[in-house]
Amino acid sequence: MAEVIAETDRLLLRTWDEQDLDEFIARTNTPAVMRWLGGVAPREQHEAAFERLKAYQRDFGHTFWIVERKSDAALLGFCGLKRVNHPNAGPITGDFEVGWRLREDAWGQGYAKEAAIESLDLAFERFGAPHVVALTVPGNAASQALMKRLGMKLREELDFVDSRFEHPGDLNPAIVYAIQAAEWPEARARALRPR
Image (cartoon, rainbow, N blue to C red; front, side, top):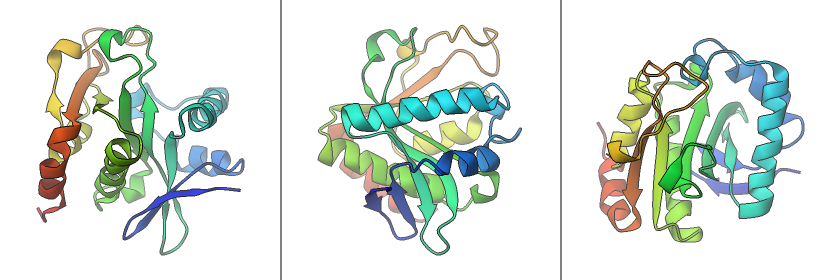
């Protein structure tokens, strides 16, 4: 049974149910959504990721949670917090990481920003994170734009090479943005202002 972790005006952030995986794959394992993640992935890769997401929730009390739209209970994707665990991440290994992945028909409606703001609130208020990072790739301008809207700052000295992808390229290096706990209240207020 899924547990609601947080609620915004339009969204629920909740834990994963076993039946969520099929819906998540159907809605997000598309060329557009997976463009900056290495492309459409086989089911086995999603199943392995699902097991890791459940383990994060069990071990840390947070994960990349399901984002569910309240008005119709539609599964929009995920957003939330995990710990950086990439083998090349160096000094940010173990840091809180905010991340999101939403289905294509949910883009451009402010859902990712709404869910990310709530996730950052949880990081700093519930989980006591001293800072939070976000990871993206050179080609993903939309993701970088959201990180900036959230008040996160580019930390080029923390970028790292992802051996899965050609370097340099649109998918490499992994680009790191970060925000400190003390910066979040002001950044949050700016992020909530209408554009």
